[in-house]
Length: 176
Image (cartoon, rainbow, N blue to C red; front, side):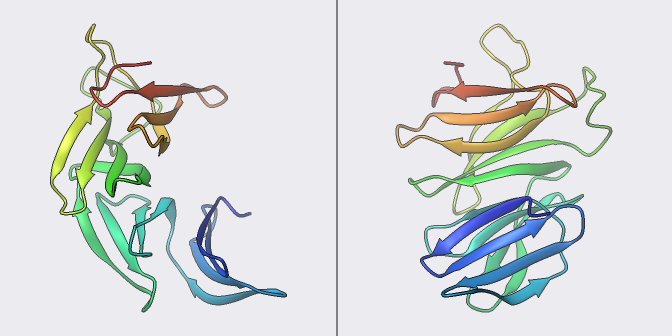
């Protein structure tokens, strides 16, 4: 089953399956043809402004960079001891990550860390959001991320096995 699809250009896309380790580059023309198949298990992926792909991999504390011209995957950014899940590159060329501790995700404790971090492409952290202005946790399991052009961040937060909510944050980390 295809879990994620990322359009690279008019004729190329990347698809992944999280049940089996598979990342495929497909060409879309008159037919759909797999041109590259890699054995890697991915949580999420996002296209950079220079057409490479940032990947959050299962059980890894690093964000990896897939160079689309060569197919090489190499470490790009570490968030150790946390694990990146959702990943999004904004129109302003910033990386937004949802991260959490590597443990039993469904059992949140006082020591749990579930947050969203914004990085520059140089890997330097710009902002981090974990609590609201009332010191309440913003997220249970921040799962997927996207953004508006106005710098608002939308986070799909998994609150249970069957329930989800969308959290919208402004640039200062306030819930809208």
